[in-house]
Image (spheres, rainbow, N blue to C red):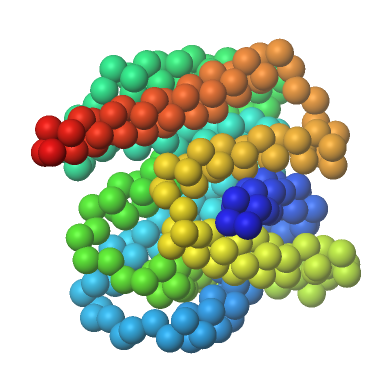
Amino acid sequence: MNRIKLVLVMIIWGSLGVFTRSIPLSALSLAFLRAFIALPVLFIVMKMKKADKVKWQLLMPYLISGVLLGFGWLTLFYGFKHTSISSAVIIYNMCPVYVMIFAPLVLKETISKIQIAVIFISFLGLFLIVGHNLSEGYGYMGLVLSAISGMLYATIVLINRSIKVRVDNQTATFVQILTAMIVLLPFVLIDGNIFTVVNLDAMAVIYAILLGILHTGVAYTIFFSLYEHMKSVEIVSYSFLEPLFGILFSVIFIGETLTFAQIIGGILILGSNYIGEMLKDRKLSIEKNSTQIKAN
């Protein structure tokens, strides 16, 4: 049942690009609305879980993550609107590569030969996709902002890894998304595009509501609840379904076509990261078993 829930979350998040394209609002307005609409759902979940009160000092990493999350959504939505969804999805999913590059510098983690190979292969795939998009007439901005979105999420991952005293997932998620909404609010008011929401047709309104409730409130709640029942490496292995569903939905609903360069680039990026994660987990399992044998 947990695996079914995880696949469902990946399907929901995979459809994010299609929903973004279907709502005629700016990327800034969409990022703000996503947080604004999701907050009541997340607040109810937090109260139902009866989360313990925590000190403000413990929330500091989550406040910083919330700021990065808000701008991460903004840059990703901009990428969806200004380049092909398939390319934005694949470039955004370079996130694990950025974590591999900066973890040794920030967290003093060692980098393995497998990770070095993954980084090299992923960047080769990235060059293929970028080259194709530029040849097709897409500007740099959509590609660059999709990459920045991946970098921002990678920074969130590094911050989460560095947290020594954690709060419960429900409180952490609520704080992050509340912070994302607050940090985007001044930009939304200055932009003024948010007020055009009153001119949306019924379907666009429904899509916007689903973006907040389904893609954020419900999906985040299910996703983090699974950490109580599944191993992290298992969740990571399923997370590679998200970009695959994203590409599939862009082909079915938007009518995008995949070129040979995009397919090869996507395989290099997603495939190398998936294999790298599996090999790393296998290595850790072998080391753990050998340590237990020596202890016995």
